[in-house]
Amino acid sequence: MADNSWMVQIGVVDDPQDTGVPPVPTDVFQGDEVGARAEYAERSAEARESDYRYVMLRHLGDVVECWGTPPAAG
Image (cartoon, rainbow, N blue to C red; front, side, top):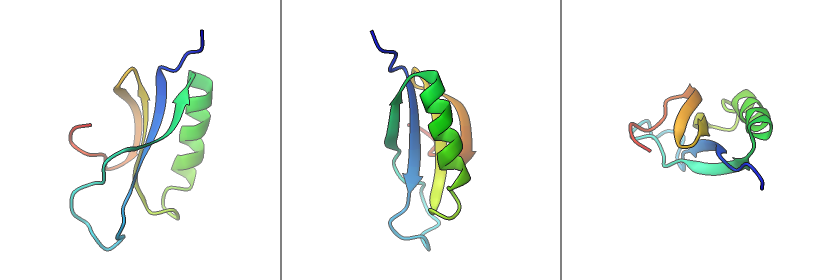
């Protein structure tokens, strides 16, 4: 059985000039820890140039690592 308990989420804004509420998380990876950590490293490295507000590495829903400013709940 595959381990899908790890997830990477990003927050992408429609309008980069909008500094208000962080965007809703978008899932970009779900799978095992090794794959999730690789995806997190890649997305974090490109976050500024891609206008991500945040990148979150999650395990079973808990935030393990975070780049940027995530939403208060999510």
